[in-house]
Amino acid sequence: MGKKKRQPVARRPEHGNRDERPGGDRKLSAIMEEMARRLLKEPEGVPSAAAAQMALMLAASAWNFACGDAAMREKRLELIKEFERAGAMPWPELLPGDPDDLIASLVAYKQTRYPHDRRRIVAAGMGPDGTIRVHWVDGNTPVKAAFGTPAAPALAGGTPIADKLIAKMKRHVHGGVVKLKEVIKGRAIAQEMQRSVVTMEGLAEYHPAHAAYIYAQNQMSVMSQQLTALRELAPLADIVEKAEEMYLPSGPPMSPLTASYFTCWAFFDACIGPANETIGTTAIKAGAAFGMHPDLVRVLQLMQDSTMGLYVLDGTQGDRAMLRDLGSDTVCGAIVPSGYRGQKGEIWFVRVLPPPLPGGTEHVVFTTPYVVLSPGLPEWLAYFGRSIPDAPREARLEVLHHHMKYGPTRNYWNDFVLEAYVNHRADVIYLTGLPDRPETRPHSMVSR
Image (cartoon, rainbow, N blue to C red; front, side, top):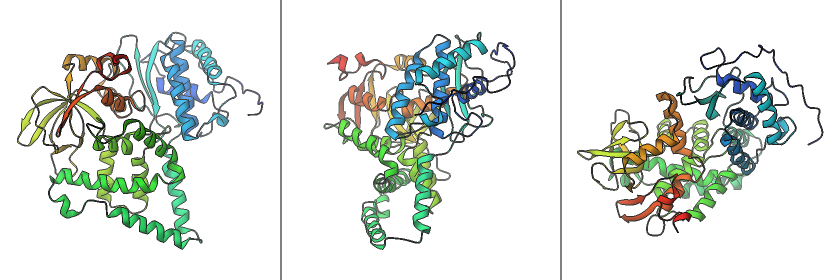
């Protein structure tokens, strides 16, 4: 990068050195936008999603560091690695200097501009439309600001991988030159893949709610094989391939990661980039753009939006397990295709999918149940207390969803299953331990 004179620090009219306290006229999301834009070479322009996300992370890191908390400053290293893996480093759009220099400039700005504001940021990010989201606490006081305050204007948005892929596909469809042999070959491959999709006759033996998700998952497998062969999805394909080599997913006794668990993670949770794009989000957007049936789009979206979760079995009603989500305290009635009935009070780690059919009421436990033998409920509630900051319900649920879907690190929940495994039956797998306490998991490094 060539030498370029650093732009002046002052970019917008100042409002004096008024202390912007919670409840004042400046929301923390607006301050984060203000600080993030100070890192851009063109602060009044619309940056790429990668540059916007990087600037926001650096701004949040600087804010917390100025408040005496360096934890988020360290998390930027993982974000930078993720951008490198995706080949989307945004440095050309940012001011010259390494991350520490950029953070230092914003620390000084915060100390000058907002010296007495002690709000601590616990999560900062952007929605697909560029909405800046800031979740914060003030000392021991729960969050007071809304989670999801719109930035004005939004920094960036969209799903760049899917958008690029769709544009490429449309050019191929509408372009004047089409390689007939490649089209025929691709069609033949697609037809061969479709033969692996479960038939309607085969689906008839399943509960209708489960059958809908089986069909959608089969179609997702076909699309995944086609999409991950494309250059645009190479970073995602690489992530999944490395995880397959590491965890050997198949189910006990070969591996505690079952095929149902791992394929859901690979399709819907393993993500890259500031928009958290997955194989699933790409397939859904591309499918919708090229005529996928709306019902299939809808069911795939339900799967994309889902997460693994921790539940207490409150009992059964007929063929349904009454599961209470430990994070949200909501209860649902779910069918359990593995046939496991369980005992009241058990803690289950499962992916529960909502009713897929209009008018349906049955949720579906889509994965073989992982039952946590120990520790008990108090320890798990303490875990959520450590992992999910106290906040208004809407804010807390959004942070909880992010934690369960992506974890603090990409393989957080995969490692938990691998290291906590203790035993299994055909219809259930048993675990013991906590995700953030390696000494409680029998196969962690510290327990060996």
